[in-house]
Length: 122
Image (cartoon, rainbow, N blue to C red; front, top):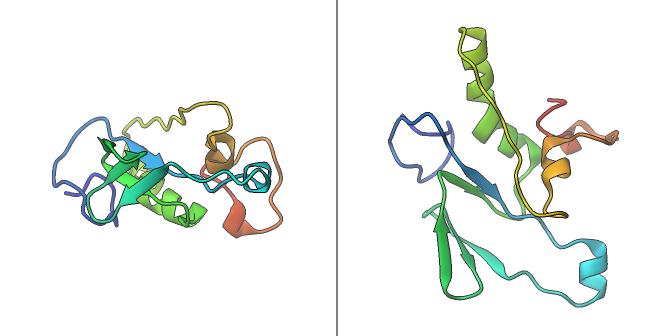
């Protein structure tokens, strides 16, 4: 069984804790300052590389172009199904200030389009 349904390259293992990472796009102020991303996703390996040397493995990784729906389908939908079967589930967004937690979770703002809704409103 895949840790997250629909996740490509996921390790076939059943665990109680699963960790997903999402790389956010640069903010407009970062683009205006000519900043560049120092994080890359290694396709098919569920690894993030910071700079050129530091690689970190996760159960699933979402690149810059991942949609809110892809994150929901890849991480949350199966947990919600489990809740309806009587299991407990917790979804936690963790990261540095400005790393995209509020955007991914979809709290604290109204969305004009359903495609922009985060995990919580979905």
